[in-house]
Image (tube, rainbow, N blue to C red; front, top):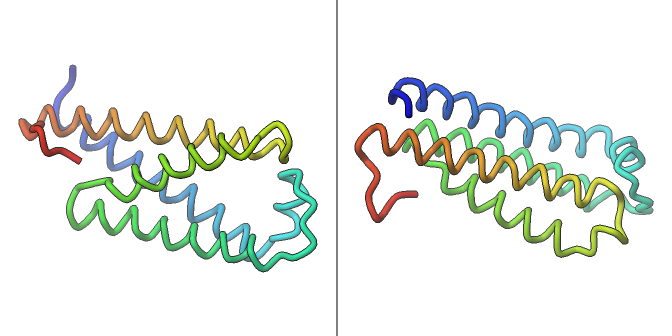
Length: 133
């Protein structure tokens, strides 16, 4: 279905974009906390925990990028995105801000997309075994 070079390049771009997305969300949560909360539809009196969430987004973004560059794996990304999907879509999204179910679906799309791209890159490299990440 494509050459290794194509899937590796697509995976490189995908990891960069997912990491960039998490990094920018983190920066926005840390430095423009109240604006982000208002835009996302939250009425939160204390901004400490949303800022802490921003710091964790930045750490995850760095983890995605560093793991991929060092090992060509995306385990942290897949684990984080799967956790986010379950957490966001089980949180009674119809009772929360509009951004909760939207984020759950968007994280799910990133999860599925990156898992498929990674699988194709591994397959074309001849590395698809029972113990793939």
